[in-house]
Length: 473
Image 1 (cartoon, rainbow, N blue to C red):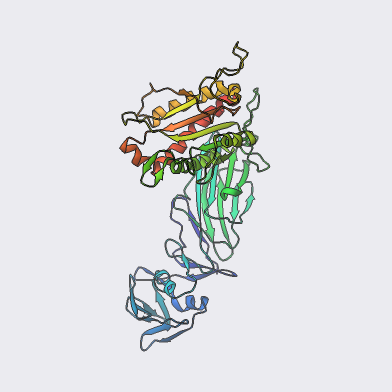
Image 2 (cartoon, one colour):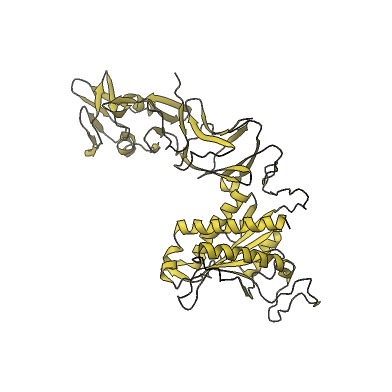
């Protein structure tokens, strides 16, 4: 008999009440889950045999021992105390001997056996799945409904060889023999196009299934290998996807009657880095650390939610010149350049966030033949050709910052400054300066992961609005 372990969205992944599932080198095996007095028990001798651990038992004396090299473990019937190499480990409830079987609480694997095994067994949350050959790979699954399409983002904590199978009413992500561990937020998503998400695992199956609400829907799948991520998009038949059908990252929308302006690439610039530490936020925490953390989150949401390839001007704690930052954007022929900094005003009264554009440039349609009035900077004036778009982006961005971070103060406007990093890029480009590290509350908040995720979503909202304007002039 094959038990199918299935849990739907909204519930924590676990085996069915009647079984445990064990990942082995040559596949998976199911052991029955024994319920006694309302408690779940794991068959001990069967589990020890899977581990090739020798054991000796005496039902009349009421004990079972296992003695791998260098260790001694003794289980006693009707007792919750287990002797492990002379020490006592207390389990939540007693060992049971029933019908010729030794039964132990599932926590015995992590609390007892993992003390004596040269390779620890990875135990899933819920103590219903055990991986004897490696670790379960955490996988995050998040869904959203955007612009008449459903998107499911599947991200693995480490590389996983997944096979994608698409059908008229279902998308299946098969994991082969690899053990994965869906997160708590993984399941439970549904919308107009997605009926539900489920994880199915048995001796013969190991897959994530996305059931579609109706047949005939169009499905697109993109693999972001560098991020161990798959983006699944579901949309009505004939509706162009943000991600190309070839699986690339060069998305774009076709607007009927309008010129198509697909975005290919976005460059995100984490301010400072390496020897240039920026403002000190906390002891041993500097602006360079926070801007990189935020930039990584911004990159993630832009790639997964917009389907546009994005890259960072630095991916670690390294010194990068302003010229090289601009060169990264130009080499990638980016459609957008976003530089991220933290404010450091001399007083703590103003902790607002602002968007900056390059100051002193003349747009090409200016009557003056010169493209730049900046006389004190030996930089090219490439930004002049995109200054109008940069100002448009800054206005949109500042409005969202005012609403989300500036306590609804809509009087704050975008600013201009002679920012060297913006001048050499011939694309819409802004520098976003978040808060003020001199303000104690902001200094604590800016390092918080939840706040940084909020900032990333602000970037997403601003870029999404601006992209709509760009593609619908």
